[in-house]
Length: 291
Ligand SMILES: [Zn+2]
Image 1 (cartoon, rainbow, N blue to C red):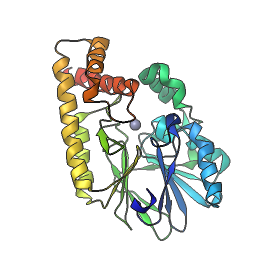
Image 2: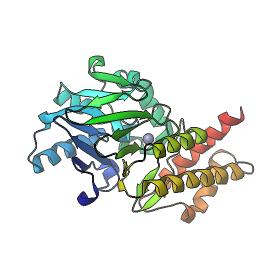
Image 3: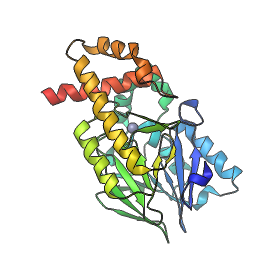
């Protein structure tokens, strides 16, 4: 795995949902260090262990870059800032208020994940002065290394991708789907999935001419152009499938119907619960699109 990573970037398996190859936190090394997407609150001890195993002091970290505030990406942020009070937390301006007061966010996660809510851990509120809200093309300077933020809405309205200008690698978060065991899987979870915005964001990422896509789920994807095109195709087909079924089935019946065809969609490491959440995200999108 390590040899596929661009220079000065490490992958820390953060153990999200108790799996070793599902959640990736990236360490970006300039004169200062940054973590991209630290994972859930349960990932926090795993991150500290990784630093110890690699004989690095966590105090070298200067910042956390969040692609978005879903708990499997951002949940450990509050724990890290508690431990390392100098950390700057970079996040899209629209996500920032939810890190200071996570109550609405937690309620929305509970609504979206149902019985799996406990696996998402929690989110400690952050002091407002630790948060740096980002906008289009904001630059993050790690000393000798710069990253640029790119709004990539669609999976979530406040989603950002980051490009490392030194290597042209792009941290895609969930904006280019999940890439598990070599398979691309839709990231259409509720409450805010939007097909058109997702497709426009994919085009934006492609226009960055990335050298590699660094997926939060999970790891580097070579051949970025092919992966981006394939993911766009998968999203269109996935939404079309649910849109067609939506004419005959309502609510949970539709979820059941997709689960009956799950062999078409269940990739490696993709559980029935996740599949259900991805169906519900598209249902919600279709319902407000029709309004
Ligand atoms: Zn997400």
